Image (cartoon, rainbow, N blue to C red; front, side, top):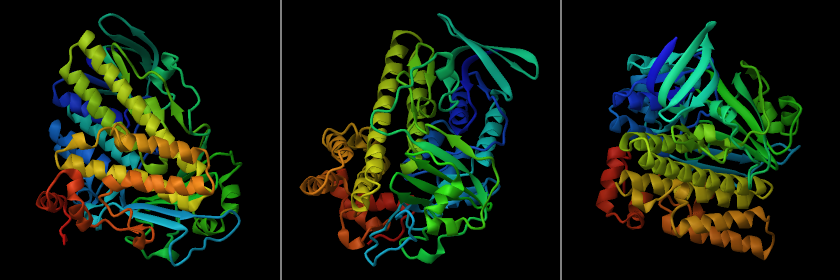
Length: 504
C-alpha cells in the first residue's frame, strides 16, 4: 500500500482527529494513522471553560458544526446523546489526613468547590473517550481523509521535500509519502522514539506515579451534597500529603478514577486503606478495564518541531491532570499549528512559525509544571494549597472572559504566563511555595497571592465570606467588567449570549 498525502497524522485520539478534520476542511490531503483500533480506553477526559471556548472557535473557523455541540453539557445531550459524557459543573476538592475519616468544619476548612457554570445546561463535560474519539474518527473518514488503523510505523525518513513513513498493516507493507507529519500519539510516542528526542527530568515537579482505570458502582459522595453544585457533578479530587485521587463520572454508569502520587504504591487497595472515607466510596466498585500503571506519570521533550514535522502538545508534554490543563493546552497547540501550516509556505517562513509554535508550547508547559509542582509541595498545607489554586482559577476565568469579549490581547499566554505583571507574580509565588515556607514567609506568600490575583479576579475569588465555596455568578463578572476594559452592558450582553440568564 502506498499513499501520498500533504499531511500525515500519527495518532487518532481527539487531538489527531480534530487536526485532520480542520485540514480536510481546507482541502488538504490527509492520512490519519492509528496503531490500535477504536473504541479504546483512554484518559485525559475532563474539559474546562477555556477548552470549550477553543473547541467552539475551532468549529467556527473550520466550518465543523458537528463538533460545536460538544462544548456544553446541554447542547451535547440534545445533539449527541448517543456519545457518553459526564457533567462537570466545576472543581471539587476534599482534603484528607491519612488514616482518618474525612471530617470538616462549618467554614469548609477541608474542602474547596469552584463552580464553572451556574446550572447544568451550560456546564462543562467529561469526555468518555471510547465514544468521543471513535465518533471523531468516523467524521474524519466522512470528510475524505485516509484512515489506517492497526498500522505499525517502523521507520521515518526525512528529506528535503517531505517525510516517508514505512510500516505494516494486516501483514502488508505500507509506505506514506507526506510533506509534513504531525505526531498526536501521546507521551513517549512515535516521533519521540523515532527521533530519540531528549526527555529530561522535570525541573520542578517530583517524579509521580499514576495508577488508573474505569470502574462501575462507585458510590457518590452523598454525605456532603451542599455547595454551589452537587460535589460529584464535577472533577472530584481527594487530596492528601503526597498525592491525590480523581473521580470523573460519565452518564453511562462508568466512572474514571485513578491516583497520582509522589511515592509508588503496591496496589489501589493499599492506597484506599489509608483513606477510610474514600475506601467506603469504592466499597462496591469494580474495575472494568485493566489497571494502568504509569511511572513516571509526567513526560516532557525539549524539542517539539522540525522543518517538516511537529508534535502536538499531548505528545510533547504531559504534566499532571490535577488542574485539567491537558485539553486547553492541546487545543491551543492545535490552533497554533494549524495557523502555521495554513499561513506559511515550506522554507524559512514556516521554520520561523514552527519555532514560535515550539517556544509558546514549551513556555506553557513550564508554567503548568511550576504551578502543579507548587501544589504538590503544599498538599500537607491545606490553606496554602487552596490559596495557590486560586492563581489558576483567576487566570483561567479572566482569560476566558477576555477571549469571549474579543480582547485576547489582555490575557497573553496560558494562565496569563506572558502577562508582564501576572506572569511574573505567578512564577514568583510558585517559587516561594516550592521552598515550603513557614511562619512570616508563608504569611507573605499568601498576601503575595492575593495581590497577584486582585487585578484579574472576575469571579469573586478574594471574597473570604464565601468560605471556599465559589459559585459561578454573572454579577461578579459585571462588577469587575472594568478589569476587562469593558462596560457593564458589554459584559451583560456576553453573559446573555453564554446562557447566564440571571444577572443582577
